Length: 188
Image 1 (cartoon, rainbow, N blue to C red):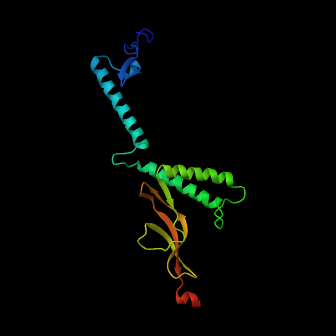
Image 2 (image 1 turned 180 degrees about the vertical axis):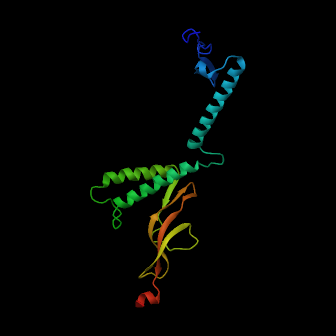
Image 3 (image 1 turned 90 degrees about the vertical axis):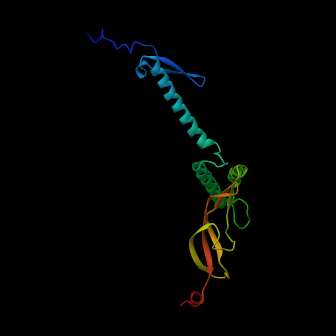
């Protein structure tokens, strides 16, 4: 038989329509097999694929059981909050607490981002200037002897702590200033 005359009987079939959750899926004939049982198997496979894709989409966009968000989404929220905090620090003059020069428009935009995060329950905490206690949920990058201190104090915040609905989702990173010892003061 020549190739033109010989045609696979499966290629001559029409596409198979499989109804799944109110949607009709049309599969090409080469993906289907003749007979009723194969249609049932294909339908089961298609339903399984649709359920797994829907589940993955739900996991990333909705709350999990117990009111928890997907950990990846929490990391993204913490990153957005941290970067908005950093931008605000660069825009605002620390002495006057007002935007520097012509940064007022940019300050409003960054402030709007921070307020939107607060509506979601995301808060940033900058502990700079507070007394340091070793029990604080902070990662200390370094301890630096600082003149004029009588007790340990958080000298600088590298990364703020980020809280979502009263749960810590990002531990802050700080530099702690320590009182100078007598050796440091004498220069020995």
